[in-house]
Length: 272
Image 1 (cartoon, one colour):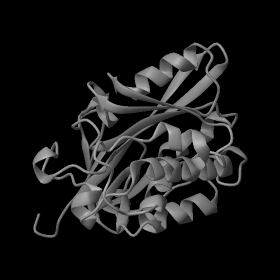
Image 2 (tube, helix red, strand yellow):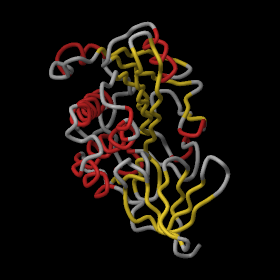
Image 3 (spheres, helix red, strand yellow):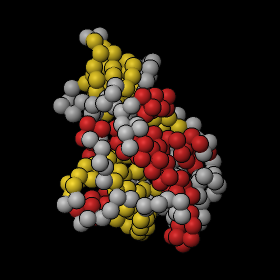
Image 4 (cartoon, one colour):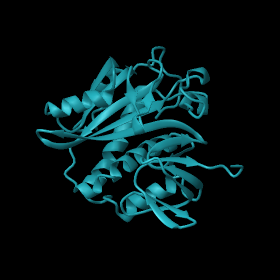
């Protein structure tokens, strides 16, 4: 990944993708469009229509992007990299909860290799410092060809401070003073997703110690005081101590250890 100023229009370059950058990415069909309501919704529709694994939709602008817990996700056109990938896993259902974690880890690996000091916030937010630079949404879709997984990624690339949706967000350009070429960044992300997905799909990383250890090393949540806000409205407060074999966050509380499978985790600062 070459960290430099993006081209004037910031557009993923379709001719460059066709001319060779995707040559080593066997099995990907990348479609770049100007605008969509949601890349996840579009890939889910394609999945129900029988699209194969490896279908990728990249949108220069999303009008109704979604994050975890049904939060809205918006960005000025061409200021972020927003795309969704279709997988058709054959792994057992018990391994599926690892998909969001391995996808977040794949993004982190690309950024850290590119010189960005990124880390993960459980389960799959990517942070630089304490500010969010990328988020992921993994959805299961039932289709005539069997269950499919849609992995949606939104990565803030060239947003200015004034364009950020919330003060707790950041972008690559704000973090490094320059942003990667978005075409090359897309290719790097797809390569990383393919590598880690294949390890999971073949059983090498299906909740095994390799993925758990790699994820834990990259996860800035571990060792921190946290408040986990659960889907039922309750909260668990304690110290995050590990990741269990199902990908759940283990939180040590005054009443004992709790494993959190879903929810919104807040890092608690010492002053709080």
